Length: 387
Image (spheres, rainbow, N blue to C red):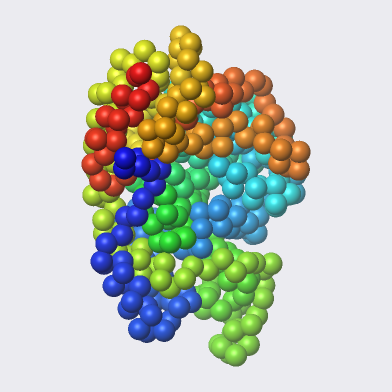
C-alpha cells in the first residue's frame, strides 16, 4: 500500500541542474544565487527587502534580535511579547533567548489561530509586541492584530513559516507586520533543502539582519547604512564586528534551488487549494470531525482534523487506524505548548484559560497536503476514519 506521506519532495530536474551549476562554479557559500533569490522573493511578496537564512527558526531568531538592536524604540530586557499557546517551539525560543517575556493567550479552535478576544487581558505596561503565527497555512486575524498594535503602539511580527502563499483581504500573509518569517524546509510549501527568509520594508531592520546573519560584521552592509560609518578600506571592513551576531547564512545551493522553486510556487498553492476543496466536500457533514475553518485564502500546509464533542471514539483509535492504513499522522503543530517540559525554563506568564488550545491538544491531529493531486489519499483517509 502506498503511504500517504506527511511531506514529500517538490523537486524535478530544474533543481538538480541548479545544484550542478553551483558545483560547477565552486561557490558554495552564500553568493549571487542567494542574492537573486532574495530579490525575487521580495518582489513576489511586494516587500522592499528579503534576507535568506539557513532555516525558518533562524529567521525567527534574527527577527527578534533585530528588533532588540533598533536605535529607536528597541525591544528591551523583560519587555513582553504576546503569543498564542499553539505554535512551533521556535516561535517562542528567540523571545526567551533575548531576555524578553512570553505572554501566552488562547487560540480559536475553529481557525487554530490566536484568539484576539484575549488580547486586552494580556496587555501590561511591559507589552511591546505580538508575534503571530498563521497556523497550517491559515491566515491569522492579521487585520485585527494590526489595529490592536496600532492602538497600543506595539510591534506586529508574523511567523509565516507555515503559510507561504496564503492571502487575507487581497494581501499575502507575511506582509502585515514590521517583519515576517518564512520557512523553506523540506515539509513546507517550497523546499530549498534547509532555509528561511525574513521580509521587511524597514531599511534599518534590513541592515541589522544583514549584519546579524553573518557574525555581526560589517562586510555585507552597504556603504551607506543605518548601523555605522563604513570606511572605504575593504581589508579593515572584512573583519569588523559591530553586533553580537550569528552565522546563519544559507548555502548558495539553497538560493539556486529557491529560484527554481519560486517559479512553481503559484502552481503548488493552486493544487494544495484544490486538494483542500476536495477534502471539504468529503468532510462537510462528517459526524465526528471539524476541519480547520479558513480565514481568507489558506495555503493549506496540511489538514487538521478535530474530534467533535459528540464523538465517543477516542483519538488513539483513529491514530491506530491511520497507522495501519499507511497514513502518516502528527499532532497539530506542538499541541498545547504550555504542557511541554521546556516551559519551566522560559520567562512567561499565562493569561486566562487555554480551553481551545487544550481541546486541540487532546482531540486533534493532522495529515499532509501536497503539491499534486491527492484525491486517492483523501478518499482513503475518509474511509479509514469512517469505519
